Image 1 (cartoon, rainbow, N blue to C red):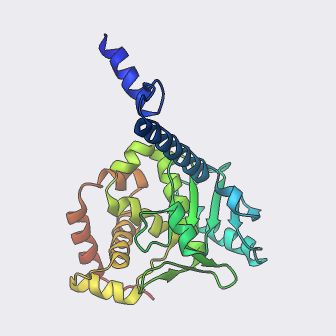
Image 2 (image 1 turned 30 degrees about the horizontal axis):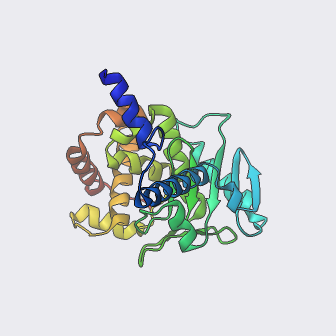
Length: 266
């Protein structure tokens, strides 16, 4: 049998096709269990692609649709406009795009859509571009994460951050986005959002003094400052920043030196 045919049979069997018919009762149980698992897996994939079935309400503005399981307040349109005003300042922004944001507002529902979540505010999936937010209060413009501290920021900036992830993937492609250093992949969206969940003054002080803070939110703040330095102090474009993706140590040192050399305006 040829190698190509052997590979084809292996793939077919992996997805449940062309398997030998079981001859024992145990074999039949295993076959039925495998079928059930495959059905559940395909249903889950379908839910990730089309989560709208679980969200009864939606509001659309500026190409962004916000979905919710409860009626959305009138402030929803304002929050979308605020988010898109931030996004529009990015050189990666362009006309004609559509975005979908799903407000979970339930820890179990958020875990369903993001089972490996680690106290995150939101997630934007590649390919589909679907954005899931852990918890949001659109009236007061707040998004919250399950983290015990530094667990909230503006919903509009959270949405802008996640939409920018999608813009980066559109600009670079999924493969290059995956290979992009985390300080650029997360720092640029936070730079566009103009906000981090870590307190601003405390973040600047710790970064300037060289303090290492064991906090994911602080790391995101550092990433944002590194991108801000390259974009505003060095006047680099996104593509030029990407070229320095593997030079994080030097960029961080430059950023700290720049902070020490000037007084940041509040």
